Image 1 (cartoon, rainbow, N blue to C red):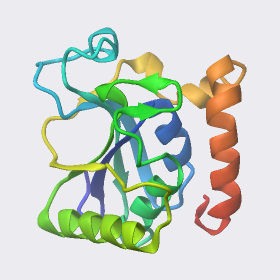
Image 2: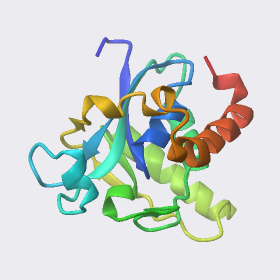
Image 3: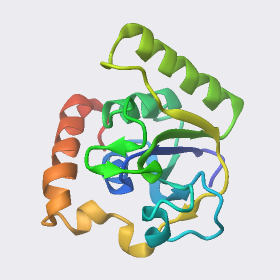
Image 4: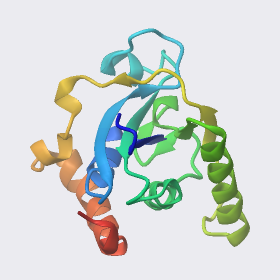
Length: 179
């Protein structure tokens, strides 16, 4: 990571969905799908999906804060998943699909908590936000076949019916943030 980069680690359901959105943003240098927030050493997709490791599917975003702010990344994060459902996003159910912000410093923690408080006060969602805030721990990159999954498999059913509509909606709402 260069001196001009910062890192954000977010979990909000399937990491394929998050990666497909965040890699389209101007100022985002890289997006790595992976696993974090659990107790097992060196988790893999099968063990995480089994719900036994405590890890969440997440993305580690390296970005240039001069081009896009952490608060902007969080605003996008909260717009592309349902942060009010505990351990669930659509048909993806389990703690591995939880909504979580893994903060790297106190500024990120304060920013995330303030945004959650603001969204709850504004009544943006039908229920309170259950996104957990947790200090970032070790991040384990996912297996190579998960990287750029949506771009490499647009014909796959999950990509067509879950990811594509999410990317389309994001692209319309955040048009001014696209590369």
